[in-house]
Image 1 (spheres, rainbow, N blue to C red):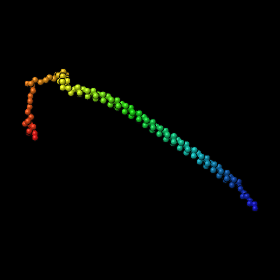
Image 2 (cartoon, rainbow, N blue to C red):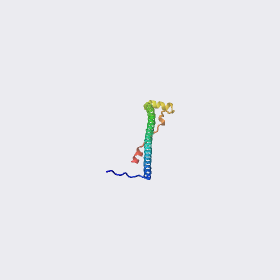
Image 3 (cartoon, rainbow, N blue to C red):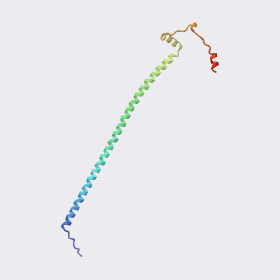
Image 4 (cartoon, one colour):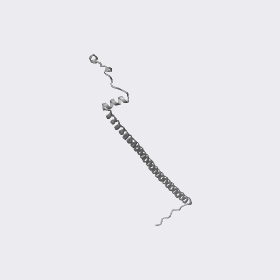
Length: 131
């Protein structure tokens, strides 16, 4: 059995054309939105990578500065150790009683006291009263 086709009017045809154009416009808008979104995602990724690179670079700069400070401190420690050794040698030389007496006489003008200049004090009574 044959079925008759529906008849389309000119208005129906125009409506179909408008619907098709509207769909195409919507598809184009959707494609543009997706393209913008992809671009923004790529841009955000690039910016994140740049920020991480800058952070790593700053950390390397900090490490280099700290290494320089460590090197300076180590040289100061070496200098202080050398000075300390020199002072210990001087102290060892100064423990000699004859050297101390000679130095006191020559540099400071000191001399050994005469027996008449020596005064003795008894502390026995003072110590008993304090107890």
